[in-house]
Amino acid sequence: MIVRPGVSKIGAVHFERRLFDSLIPLPKGTSYNAYLIEGSSKTALLDTVDPIKADVLMEQLKDVKKIDYIIAHHAEQDHSGAIPMVLEKYPDAKVLCSQKAKEFLIDLLSIEENKINIVEDGETLDLGGKTLTFIYAPWVHWPETMFTYLKEDKILFTCDFLGSHLATSDLYGTDRCQVYDAAKRYYAEIMMPFRSFIEKNIDKIKNLEIQIIAPSHGPLYDDPKFIIDAYKDWVFSKPKNTVVIPYVSMHGSVKKMEEYLETSLAAKGIKVEPFDLTVTDTGEFAMSLVDAATIVIATPTVLSGAHPLAVYASYLANALRPKTEFVSIIGSYSWGSRADKQLAEMVTNLKAELISPVFVKGYPKDEDFKALEKLSETIFQKHKELGII
Ligand code: FEO
Image (cartoon, rainbow, N blue to C red):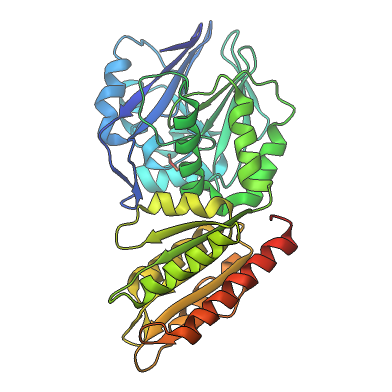
């Protein structure tokens, strides 16, 4: 697909893929975007594709006589995995990447060292009327990541950053709601743990004149402000007046507690997003964490600790490091439990204030509902103090 004269989007759309990294659900599939930039003297290929779709890329390159440079923004295999095949077809091509990426490409793909040239942050490369500037952008989401800016066409190639797992035949994201949701899901699952680096990287590109953002997953953006503003909101804005309740219930006690708390919070004007962890899509849960001011984890007691699904949800929330301000834990037990302490110790990355857990013996009774009401009131007051109510 032609993006601008001399600039084509190639690569593969993987409509049927449903899981990434054996971890991330892909309800809308994904794509591995590569870009071919043909200057008057040199040709560059920006990124490749996941090896599973290498045949698609090689078919697209069948009439391309010469590739001088393969620019590897990121060493993860969904973008770098077909580099060895491209090098086999174009043995004189040089891989251009950051110092760190060079190490990773050798480690992960056994690419010969003499095939790789390191480019420095800010270095430019003239392809003949197409000038590329390499911009180091570490930790979105590996330490070696970088962007490329194409000056003449004002295109910023960002690889994973600002992308979305969205398989579509559209070059640009014409369905704004769909693109927003897919990009938010992608941010939540992949970029959110790196918020401080995102801030630095957004700052680094703020003075570039950008007409098109071309990521390596999902559609391109011909209105860069749309995705930059969305990221600014997700990264910088105050959390919203929302409580996320990941819960699991074995015999109904925890479910009753969750329902009570949900109703009580909603009555105070707080948005509640409950997730039954037995049927939860990990991506939906991650998305809810982007904005929520409070997380309340709800678990029964299993073998004196938390239910494994509650452990998983806590581990995930802790790893994703959302901007959550408050955490609490509720649950039930029959003869003893250390689930509240166990889960509290699992979410320390959040740096959130722990609001006293509510654990009840057996099925919740009047005094237990009073304790939940108190928890609800405390959350309401905390949100008020934060200025989000
Ligand atoms: Fe799309 Fe981090 O690879």
